[in-house]
Structures are given as structure tokens and as C-alpha cells.
Amino acid sequence: MRSLVWCLSLGLVFGSHLAALVARAERPNIVLLFCDNLGYGDVGCFGSTKHRTPNIDRMAKEGLRLTSFYSASGVCTPSRAALMTGCYPRRVGLAQTNPDGAVLRPVSPNGLHPDETTIAEALKAQGYATACIGKWHLGDQPEFLPTRQGFDYFFGIPYSDDMTPRPGKNWPPLPLMQNEKVIEAPVDRDLLTKRYTTEAVAFIKANRDKPFFLYLPHAMPGSTRAPFASEAFRGKSANGPYGDSVEEIDWSTGEILAALKESKVDDNTLVIWTSDNGAPRRNPPQGSNLPLGGWGYTTMEGGMRVPCVVRWPGKVPAGESCDEVCSLMDMLPTFAKLAGDETPSDRKIDGHDIWPLISGEKDATTPYQAFYYYYADQLQAVRAGNWKLHLGLPRKRTNLQDATATSAAKLYDLDSDIGETKDIAKDRPDVVKRLLAFADQARQDLGDRGRLGEHQRPVGRVDTPVPQISD
Ligand SMILES: [Ca+2]
Image (cartoon, rainbow, N blue to C red; front, side, top):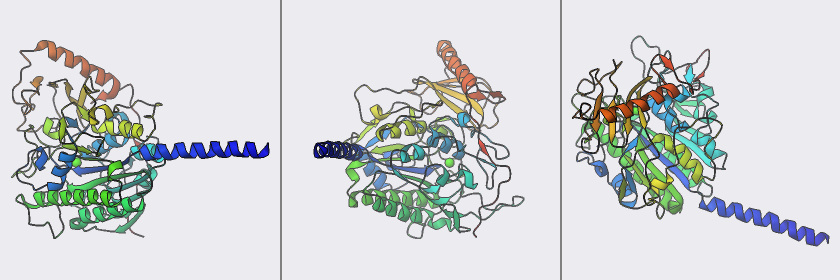
């Protein structure tokens, strides 16, 4: 009798082990390669003729291009807050902060609230090994570092690479951190892409036997006027330091894809390559958002629509593209689903599971009835279907060459006018009215400049921020 019970329980234990193993085998590794300020038209597979990006182009041939993929902001910190939480930046208190402004500055009292559930936390709860290798920019105080937001490992810089000391600002030298320690300051920015790549490849190799999540937010091309690249790439592109940094990112992408193959996890890894916002305006121009209109740091398409390539051999269609509206906010719900979890249900999340779109499900359509374009704390535009309405508002920040700088509402048909050049608000008052109603819903829910929304959550905050310096 005892042996029968023993056999039965052994069978149960073995059975559940087996089930766990099978479930684990089906769960993909997830690699998210995330550029900084790289424009829609900056890589070959999205139309660049200036930059040589054979690895990203090959990734597009083997995978899917998302051509209406949006950041939830035109600038770094809110964009990353949206990525990590699946929420519009205003929902999680990071659309604009005091005293920082549109992005977090060094030694800020603010950061992503510890109570928010990040992608890393959602995946870690499912047994994933997690690493953030690159630029964080969601708070530089210990309470806000990646290691406190679900990442087992952090190697990189806590905020933007352009925030080195400048007159009147007593900022510490840009620190390179490993977990919660500064290991170098100031960091050699020429070497960042190379060092991130080495770290990323090591992480993949060390974790090949578990499900893993690798988040690699590049520092490049970044926000300095002369982006950085290592010696092998410096002076080699046809587009100055900007092009050099893009071509080094392409090399890095190739190294990471090769590491997945060498580690024999290529077929079980979802890789997403994208950018946090469009290329900012420079004179002379550096990055390109073509054929979109406008520049980074704005709510024009060029500011918020970013190139995106998705690859998972056998699961994501090869050599195709999808023009349905989707966004960085969809990463959390989609990854959680793939890992066998649910999107957090105890709070409002704006993103959606877009697996039907990226797996090429027949007739899959955008989950967004309306998509909202905020600049910092201000709602500036709304998209529904092919229509985009720029709200007629006095704007805090305008892009001088944009058609949207004036205060009258303007309507564009993105299907026929992707560059937002021909205002047809007068011809379609019915559409204007419908999109204004969506804008009102957003204001009520998420708020607008000078108005709180009903469903906003607080930013994380410490009383006395301290600089991150070496011991
Ligand atoms: Ca950025």
C-alpha cells in the first residue's frame, strides 16, 4: 500500500515536473534591443540609403517590420516608463516631473514608482533571468535602479549620455554602473556600444538553459550632437558620427543574433529591435525620420513613430510587414502572455497583447480605438484609424518647421499623407468631432496640462537624492 502511494506521488511529482518542463520549453527568451533617438528612416529596411545596416536588414528579412509602431512619448524618460509599465507616461507620473522637466536629470528625486510592475518583474515572477544592459533613465537613486525593478543584473548608465557636467549644473561625471555600484566615472562613451554588446553576449551564453529577458537600451545615437562609436566604426560611415554610431548598433545586433545561434536558442527567442523616439532636429540634419514629417521631441509622426523589427524563426512571419497601430506599451502585455502570465489586473494598463499582430494571425487588427500623443504633460494629438488630429492648442514646445505649430486644430489622413502636410480639417468636420471626443476621454482618464486625470498614479520620489559616485 505504502509503495503504491509512493508510486502515485512519484508519478504526480514527475508529471508536474514534466508539465513544467514542457511549459518552459514553449516559453521564449525575449531580447529587446532599444536604440536612443534613432529615426524611422535611419536603417536600410526602413529606407535609409546613408547607413549600412546589413544585420538589422537581415533581421527584417527573417522577421516582421511593424510600420505603425509608436513610442508613447517623443522623449526618453516617458518613453521608457511606457515601455516598462505598459502605460501612458502620464498614468505612471513620468510624463513630466519637477524639477526635471520632460526627462529625468542626474541626481533627481524622481523615478519610476517602486509599486509599478515592470516587464522585468512580470517575467522574473515567471522564472526568467533578467538583465538591463544599457541606459536606464527611470531614476538614478538606489530605490529606482533596474536592480529594484525586477532586473537580476544591471550594467550601464543611469541616465542620458548627454548629461555630463555643464556650467551652472553640478552634476557628477557620467557613471558606468554594475548593479548598484559605480565602476567607472566618467565612462568612456566611445566604448559603450561595444561594452554593452560584450555584456549582452555573456548574459545570453550564461543563461542559455533558462528562459531569459535581455533588455538592451543602447546609449546611441543618443542626444549629443556628436554621437559616439568605437575605433572600428569611427569615421567609417557616410553620415558622420551619427552614422558611425548607427552602424555600430547594427554590428551589435549581428553579434547578439549570432550569440543566440551559437547558444542554440535562436529558434526559441523573440527578438525585438526598435527605438525610444524619433531623430531630433539638427542643423545640418543627422538622423532621418523620412518619410514621416517632423522631428524627435515632438508629437509629429517623426517624433513618435519608430522603426520596429520583430524576429522569432517559425513563429513570426518572415519578410513581411504589418501597418496596424501598436506601441511600446504593448510589450508588457505581450511578453507576459508569452511567459505564461497575465497582464497585471489590479491597475489600469494601456498596452495590449499584440501577439495576434506579430504572429501574423489572419485579419488581426490594431487593439487601439484611439492612440494619444502627449508631449510631456500636454495632450497634443489623437490618432484613430487613418486619421490624426493635432489639437488646436497653445503649445509649450513646437517644432518650427511643423505644420502643427499654430493653434488651429489640423486633421491629416495618414494613409495618403504620411508626412502630415495637408490639413483637411475643414473637409471632414465629422472626423474632427469624433477625434475630439476621444481627446476628451483621454483628458478625463489621463489628464492634460493643468488638469489631473481620474486614473493617474504617483511618480516615485525620495527626499534627498544623492549622486551615484564610486566608493
Ligand atoms: Ca530618446
